[in-house]
Length: 598
Image (cartoon, rainbow, N blue to C red; front, top):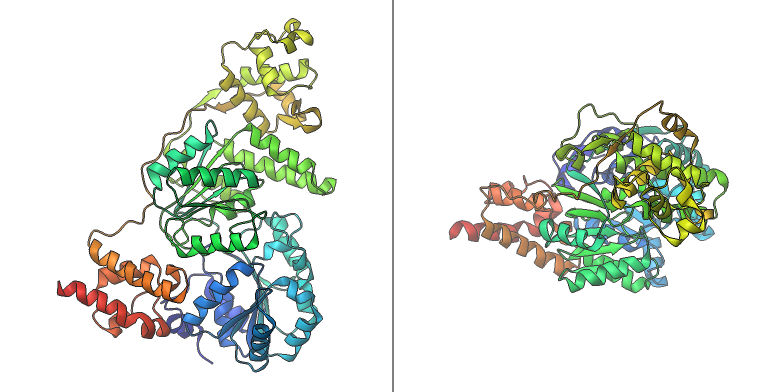
């Protein structure tokens, strides 16, 4: 039996494990179950790939990501790992070849879609085969409370029932305590060891701003910071993804839409372009992104408010997997809150589900409106404590101005009460500012004590007050009354003058200085860097894989700094295992040699 460290170094080309990878791998090699929560880019896949190579038999990986299985398997094969996949994209002949290879014990890893386990034929095939382990990737898909719920995942408990002696590992990058417990219960992992790595992604800069002219805000952000970078832009609606994508194309960006309403061939084509070409922006709904392992995504932007902090964390986590600086940029407004609550009220969930969703939305709003470190608040949601402010989010870099909003808040709450909690924010502002609209005279609101008492604040300032009161739970939006603002129980002390409130003073956000381009060390020759990238590109195109499957940027930078002169020196580069050394070493050494000869 080869040691796990030997496999890590010789196959994958990494010198050492990142904690707690070694503990997880050891547990699985010994035949124990494991539940793993590890942030995107933390190296989750090695936690089941290495045990599958150590243990007898084939590791079965259950993944919902049919569109990505081919790339994952191709990357493993380039390393000399005997990998294959079974999904609906294969014809009968190809499927038979894979099944025969499994039965003949000629595979190290087999990726299958979860719906395959509903087929008796698949179960019989597994029962006839030698299985080393089961890996359940994206395990949060089992949660009926989550935004990525897959009904087929509910069947995965049968793995424990039919194969009780085979270890199972469930992995996800995102799960709060409730989702974690649901994974344990539904997958029957009560006896599994739990490995929870830190959720912090210090290279990601979190920035949240108010939406005032969404397209122009986005354009400024891209022009000033990400002119030629790969990124993902999330929108709530399919229509908006197409609108933003085609508008960005007209502005000179390589932008493509992605949503569930597009033809499967179009989605697949756009996803492949994003993975294999440089500088592509995908504008998408939440249908895009799970399992995307492109390392050089320099930004994730949200044009609308995500429904939950879990969604936000998972989506922003697709940026900066290579550890280089990246941006998580978002704009939002009160309309987003109303739209999301409308979607929740129209969902098929029961009252308990809707209450849970409402709670999660309120937590997301709280993150937006907070005036202290965003990273501390984000980590706290997942039960992790960060003692010091991060210094790499907008509230740390540009602390927001606050003001004593107690009196304004009382006026806002009072006008909602005096108008019988039947009207939306626009009309309430008109009453406070003493407008003479037909609606005010129709309902005799010009006779109210609140009429005209708020002239000291303009419309935008009042919008800010109402938005923050909704975000903090003093007001709610009644969708059955067309967005009417209603008082919550928590507002009583504020109305009575028993407590005060500090509000954020909204200002147009200054754009941070450019931080997110891959920074080259001063001693890297640009001409050599580009020659190494060109060598990588040729291999990638020839093999039909994304460039990072050949080598990550970090490996190329190491080559450009260390200037390896022979295969022994080249083998010391991070990411160079035995197979890559043999396959790519001579070509990259020639590039370095040509550079040294000039």
